[in-house]
Length: 157
Image 1 (cartoon, one colour):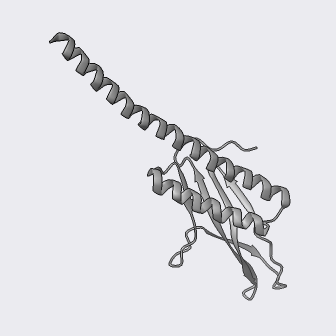
Image 2 (cartoon, rainbow, N blue to C red):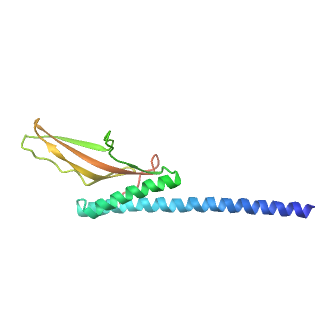
């Protein structure tokens, strides 16, 4: 009787550990996938800085990275990497750069990429300039990737 009870305890423990093993391997796998997404964002930032502008290939890479991050979030339910983009109803990531103008229409180009803390923002749309009021107004739309929201800032390279 005692041997049968010990046998059942061993079976229950083995089954429990097998379930935990799957859960732990999924977490490790998710951590690896998140790290790869983060590295892609950092590599893309470095690539854009090197070229000084966003090429069509880099624009495509940004769109794919956004899609992959959203799929990662949907699959895992994790929010430790996030994407924010302009929406038709409100422009949450638009940045307006206002500079005094002479009315001559001089317009400063939008930076192709910005980084601050744990956020990397890629220029998604370079809006036109308006100098009709004596000020030069330029609207730059960015798609931003936040790495580990609420945690320590990313390391700059």
